[in-house]
Image (cartoon, rainbow, N blue to C red; front, side):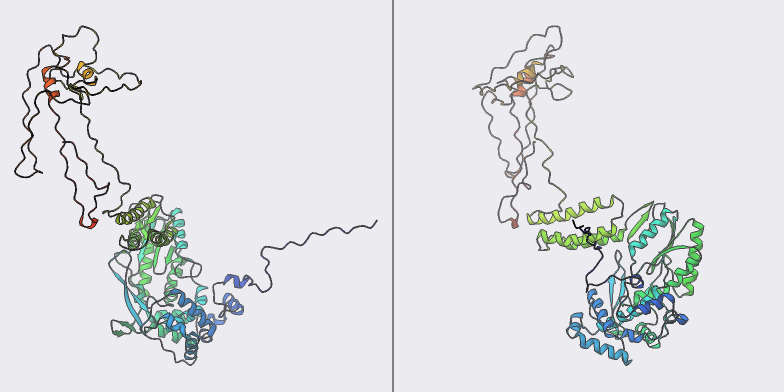
Length: 593
């Protein structure tokens, strides 16, 4: 017998194993800097970035700016933003029609130092939740491409040393990280908050101090001149051209990087003193444990801003206790008493957006309106999902009301849709029997006050058969004798009213005698109502009629015909209804007189 070789198990393949030709995931230093532009920053440059360059300054960067691969990637980012045209009225689509020729022209002009940025077009956009407007500078498409290429080269150099408490316009950081940091500090007991606001920050940044901060890490003279040229771009506003002496235009590609660079010194200044600050661009809050610490932190911030050429807003800058009513606003949220919810400006902007998408004269189908509406609702909930649990009850009802209003418009109705339409709340009373008790007092005027007590209802059984209507009413009953002593029995008037064919039954017979003549028509018109005649005097009741069967007063009242209800005239159809009768929801009912 020959020995068989043992079976070997096939080798297992890892889930992360990739085939030849597939893109390998970044590892090592490339994984830590996966957001940088690979066409610019090689692994050798990233290693020098982490370890530090000689003298702490970078040379020979202009060739990275005007490289064609960097310019192509820059145009892709500009196209993704879908910006408007600048002063030359050239759109992104027009620039893309001859893309390679335009990019080569830009590259040659940057290499030959012939590039000059054009003026920016200034427009004013409204601030959310206020009547004020904010200036916005729109560069041309070619200038935005060059700025994007310049930012791809400079951003990793400054990002390496930015403070950790800065979250605005930085890679892998955002507003949610800033909100989580604020919530964490509040839970740790930092309830005293310095809510600071810089007055017109982007328009008041000094150019000279900003360039000094850029020169601290960049030594390429051509790159420095390019940055300074963007700072001194002309501004065209309603055919008026002027050159700014301070500030950077909001809307430029390099503006967020330069604004973070200028306030980075404030971040490190407060961190060195142990002051907790959370900043998003020019909006920041300082959280302290006591009111005295908050006062000292505010003085430190005020002295630094004065030395840097900035100004704190005298009204918007304040110190608040987050545990009390009032709280503070930060990045769209309102923090107060351990809770958070959307601030008033955010909710007002949300409602304005929903109103624009749910107009009753929009002209779209309800399905298309809902699809468009869900884009806003999902995005808004994604950001404000950490609000208090009572936030969405009111907003959900309001959104549904807007959708119901569209349906009401299609059905020819008016007014907002406030839920299901309810029927009339009044019920027409049924006619009572003659002499029947109608409350705490007896209906018979001859009965004593309060009347006889009503016995319990009879046991349930088969419903009695109603006999046919009699041809003539029975004659009036005389007064019965006084009841014998014993337990109180059921009033005879109620029994007579419930007996078939009695004067108090539901099918009331016609009164005896000739019928009264019809009332004369008023000369004022058929719609004019004639006042009813005065009631006839009733005879005095006998002394022994405490629980009569049918006294004279009861007989007179039962014999009187009931007053017919006043009929409401039918509503005429509206001019736009095509002459059709009003719908069931618009018909009127005759109310009892």
